[in-house]
Image 1: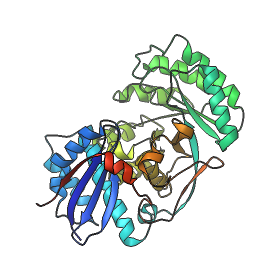
Image 2: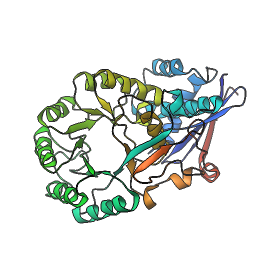
Image 3: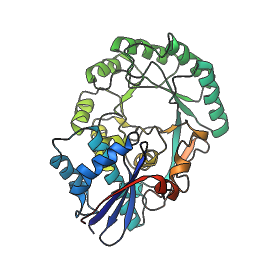
Length: 367
């Protein structure tokens, strides 16, 4: 069974890939979100042309071939585009086998604990506490993450004193029995990160994400070595060589690859295995409600070093973000603080025809 046609349907925000084989079978995947229209251009120029005519069910070698052929164009856009091919082929393989992707990679359908992930810094400590407590009470979340510092902020907070105010205020409001996580998005120097980390420890926070600029691995390692709580990171890192450095130096306690930033399930499984061999936990990054959340769910049900929970964005109308617009039926929803991986073949999704009708279309095929 060979890859005969590759199509993309994209907006600037989000883009889907459809793969069709020479015998007519199809599968759906997604390139990474944000500037997806640029990523789909990369997909057709640098990914699709190498994949046409290759094995549609045994495709790990094809992904390696793309990396080799595109040695002049490494980096984030290539990996984000490869994620579209990889996830479409996993969906195809699951549909052909009549199995969910998680079963194909050694897992099984079932439930996962979710943590409610806040994306906002333009919010006061009181307002953040109020909305997290509502989600705790209304939907059963037992874990939350909120933001500190400023994105790549160089020790300058979103506004003066916000981090020192929001850490204890939200922690106290959520109370006992709720896991508490914070995310600095590359905001701090090591010294400032350690200071904030000690404050977090004192208020029962167990997870400190991306405390320093993510590319400064030694800075992050200093924070990891100085704190008792888990220091986590890796969402931006899209090259396997970077992951060898992160894991080999034990820069973090918990690795957080993003399936679509990294280039798909095959490459994410590589990282998860490397982490498992080093005794590290893997909690994937999945900060929006495109396909990446579903991919992370299937992955977490399969890997032996899976983290405690799934990242689940709380932004958008009851935290569904774009899910109602891009899928025919919601593929995930939090009930009693849990989400569930179904037993449907592949990813178990159908892309909304209205989205496809309004998206920019392009195809790569032998003709």
